[in-house]
Image (cartoon, rainbow, N blue to C red):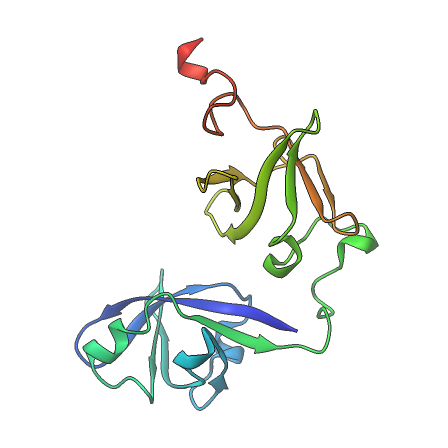
Length: 182
């Protein structure tokens, strides 16, 4: 199973360094210089880390395959992956009572509201500062970011392939009255 370690952000300076959006608790171990990592999309890699640094608030990396700013900019949005045989020991599966979810466990689930009305399909899990957000694509093609908190996401059933949402009015286009209008 492939899990996301980081997402490549914008280029930084002129020598091919990029900012990373880290998704692992061990960036120094998993992205150490000399490490080769698979990518999504696959045609962007694999990439070999030549330099990794932390400036106190952000992580930056350089790759042997991108030695200048132009090559680094072309990598923006690429996901750096890690191959795992199974869920790691430090992450508990939801079946064991933990409320932790990996992106791949949520993407593709059909989203319904608490009354059973179809809202769309989960197409992404975006990390956030206060909480992550489920991205639900409606049948009309709109992307709606739903804060991934228990009050708004009361139930997830991977066996049924569904997620139950309790969104406030106005969050989904054409559904309910927005809070400001009340």
